[in-house]
Image 1: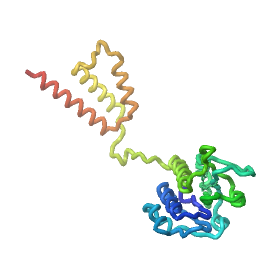
Image 2: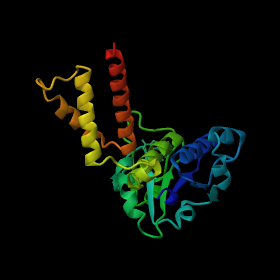
Image 3: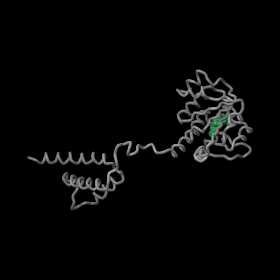
Image 4: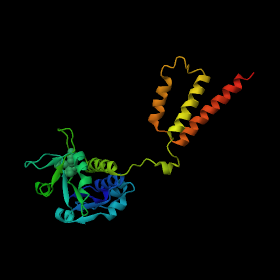
Length: 250
Ligand code: SAH
């Protein structure tokens, strides 16, 4: 999904901003950058320095004379706007936009352009009207304009979060961990061992149980321990028992 997102910058005038945009993109796993009629040299010492190691995206960036060229192969274009315009247009928040992307990207040829405007004047009405929808980052109404790279960062972050939710879990599987979950019988053996030890250290009085074992069962069952983890816990109990036996021996 992230590969299908293109950041389109129109008429950018500061190389530092272009560099900072590539940094934000690379941080979030985006790599497709298109520059439309940039008003500065995109590859400068400043842009490379602000890219902080993502300057390969500067070198890969496509440069186009017009917005139409930059989005010709895109199936969806969304214009980022700091202000509301005279003609109301479908308007979404970054989160709403991102939530729609997994569905959009199910189409084989899906490619989504996220279009950002000039530092001084944003996007023109004509440019905004070439977009299916507008995305506005909710801000202080009296101070609504973010720095260009900051705006890219916020929107790219929401896209990444939405992508992470659809991606398979990154928690190591039992197989990768090398351990299976403890079985019911393993757990029952553990609970019996635990109770014996708690009685031996005089923490637990079976005549006044106060639901201690039930509460501990609930705790361990919630944790869904693996066999290997249960072995560690049993090892701790055995070591405790050994120590008590030794100290009780005259
Ligand atoms: N002064 C300009 C904004 C320039 S900021 C104006 O008034 O329109 C440069 C670009 O960053 C904007 O064109 C827009 O694409 C993006 N941007 C800045 N703040 C934003 C916000 N609150 N929501 C969405 N995009 C924003």
